[in-house]
Image (cartoon, rainbow, N blue to C red; front, side, top):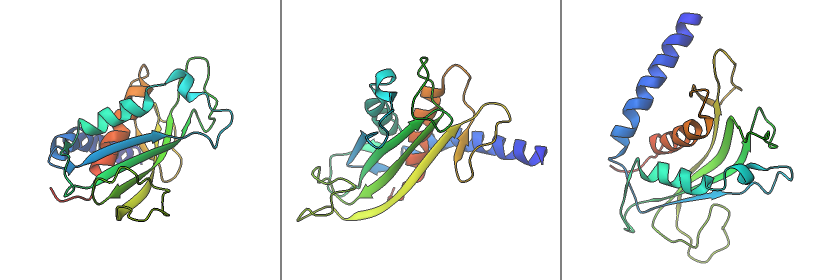
Length: 177
């Protein structure tokens, strides 16, 4: 079992390194990242990480080609939970190890459309949508079932999670290259 886990981890790390290089062939018309933590009254994430939206958008854009064209799809990333071991109240250090959200791909570049805007007269057509949950673990800590796991350095969960989340968003894009 240990060998299987090590092999899976090595394979995952190799794919993570190769994935961003291959992903640059993907073209989008726009990338929109939103952080909405309103479902959690106790969330203090933006106190520690006020640039999370911009940082995640920058990380995604660095892995794709963005052309302001109606021919290329638009991606909307809505982060709705940032937590440390399930708790949205981060410690005084601001550490977190879980990032959850919804990724939606739309046809076209209509900026007035969001994932929840289904009452607009001419919304862009939704191509696809999925939930993405990411958990950073160190050592042999188990990850929740169904979560994508990464093993960042102990110093930098934030950058590791933001970059891995962006890489996974791009990896899962189903767009013509």
